[in-house]
Image 1 (tube, rainbow, N blue to C red):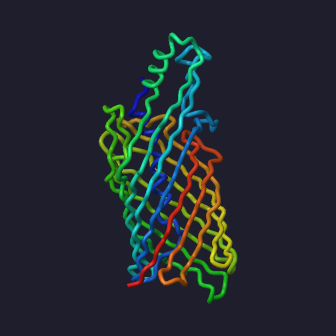
Image 2 (cartoon, rainbow, N blue to C red; image 1 turned 135 degrees about the vertical axis):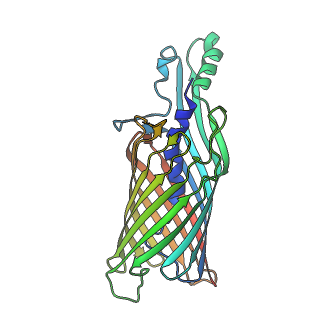
Length: 327
């Protein structure tokens, strides 16, 4: 039987980065004083393969021929998460913005598909055994809520009425609270919506607006996952690098992500192959409509996996709408 406790821990990096995709996604930008922004986000993430410790891409169902007669069973797996998020942001000053994010997983599941090529007399027995060895897992519900503050200590938001180049930098402090449902390792049908730990994250952002058409940006995040019971999950180091072009009301970006996680500790011992690396690239499109009666912004981002270690080859699609209101 598959050790469900180890399986669940290995999913945490996949699902934790989903919430991170929504948080402080605007680099160094902060809101003007007394401006409220409502963000409604949706993320779809999927993985059919994973990277092993040497970086080779393998199927989610590993070496099924080692547990069944060769050539009798075919199979693959698919890991999917769909997450809707409500995010409220408020400008306390022209340099300090507060944020609260509430994620809700509308669906998240691990699904295996097994086919049969052997003698019919063994079909039911073998496929039942495969489904027990590689169980399907499914769940939905509220995830871990995130609260944070972002402070811009250098520059201001990109301004077409001032000379270029322009520079801005910001730092942010965020806390992810264990409000989601922690998995029950004794329940084979349970699939968690939270990791059961309080996480503290520190971000640094920098943007260089070279002229009115071109900008460079970067973000680095360190997230410490505080110890919970016998489990002490590894810390995250997440980086984002992008080049952006501005054409009228559109912002077109090319984004490179490099994400890392240190090894987990279980019962005081480091868990081998639990440290991860993940690299992805993709486009991001923003549309600004600030001249309408209700100012709003539309964003879409796609991320494609290009390399990794001990993690899932995850594709991500992120969409959100941002609505502004000034008090």
